[in-house]
Amino acid sequence: LQVAGRTESGKDIDLKFVREEGKGWTPEKKPEDTGKLKEFMVQEMESGARAIWASDIVQVLNLQDPDLQRLLLERGFLPKPRLHVVAKTKDGKEHHLYVGKRVEGKQDYYAHLQLEQDQPNLLFTVSEWDVNRYEKSLADFFDPPEAKQPDKAGDGGKDGDQGKGGEDAGKEEGTGKTPEEQGGGAPSAGKSDGAGKEPQPPEKDPEAPSDAPKGQQDAPAKGGNG
Image (cartoon, rainbow, N blue to C red):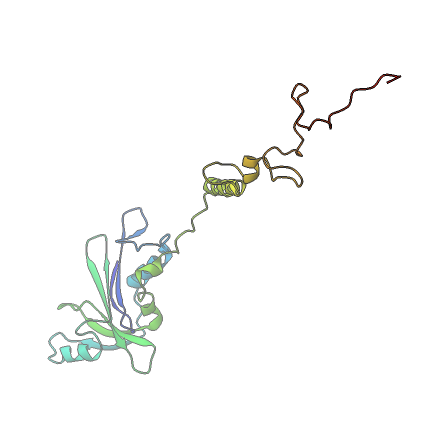
């Protein structure tokens, strides 16, 4: 099933779907960033190609009529039709539907089948609804892409890294320790740097000579009658 043409806004239409025996429809090519195929939409196009409902019969087309080309041009089939639908059946035959311009004052479009020499060729009209089923882009036949599920293991790892980063905050680069761990904590008031204790006077050596001048040394104890 193939559809080629253009919309009224001038957008190109290029659709092609294939169905193998015992299988569903598949696109010839799938657009990027799309989900599953909406097969029911392809089935609607297939139904429209199987049974074409004419809103009105306009006239019989005579292939020998010298004005045939002018008529097809006026009805919007030349140089290219508005839509060209091709349905290929199991026997290998191709069936063609051509859609021209909109009928003035109506919501119908001119249409005709494949013009053949030995067949009655009719110019008829089809409803706008029948035409709209073909006027779609390829992406319209697909669901949106499925949302990706978050990787829980990966997220947990990231959270762990963040927690670890919080624990490491405040540690100096290269040492892996906080300033308190390196210096044993902040020095307390009244204590000297490094020792962490109050300063003490040096111990006196009893054998060392006294630095006090003579006369100021301790006097020996006098006897009772002295």
